[in-house]
Length: 290
Image 1 (tube, rainbow, N blue to C red):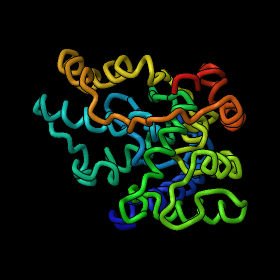
Image 2: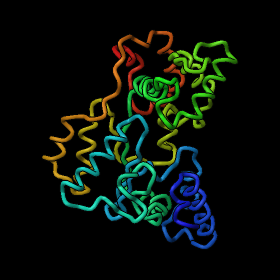
Image 3: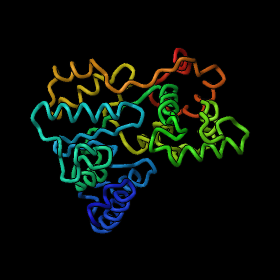
Image 4: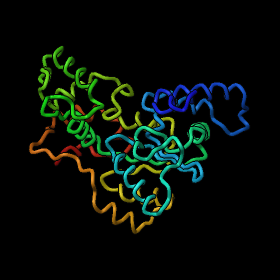
């Protein structure tokens, strides 16, 4: 397979699945590889090597969770490595200016990660499900002055939401019109867990929590700086530099002038994301004040 085909989640998934199927037939269990477990991870809709920061030499893996500080993690990582005069390019397939679209390590390191997960310490960040869904709606459904989706990733999703609104007699169906939060919530409710867009699917699905045993899960609201420091000092970043850098967030979410949630909407959100609330310890009334 040409290296360029690895630069998409689907291309990497097909490559990894093929290799794993071949190896499954050739390698005995005594090697310590868990091929069946690896296939469980790779086959997931939300699996993407571009959302995993892996350091094989440190046996460290960070699964990035959309809408939960993933942009900040990438930025701080790159800036910190440059500050420490360490080349941020860990493989020829990872130009740092395109870190969202390229691998952070050679494909062989990802194969080692998914086939020997017991050798690695996995980390991830999670977020209050109420806040994460609200952030997805604010950021992904904002429109340009021409009424087009401001987020490139929504160019195909927004028309689907408008068709849904039209079929169900909900506001937001007209081209160029804003999609109200309640319409967006109804759209999310209509989709199956594990099959939604990664920005608003359950975090237990996005992070494959049933297949991956995490060493540490950090709540974004209270443990983000702690988690960033614990992870990135292992990579070689200075604790002092990290403390100063993390004291000035540079990717704030857009503020709203009105309150979106009420008790009825919050109950609907809780029912969708019950697994996240239970897995990560968030409060059922955590919508208040958002």
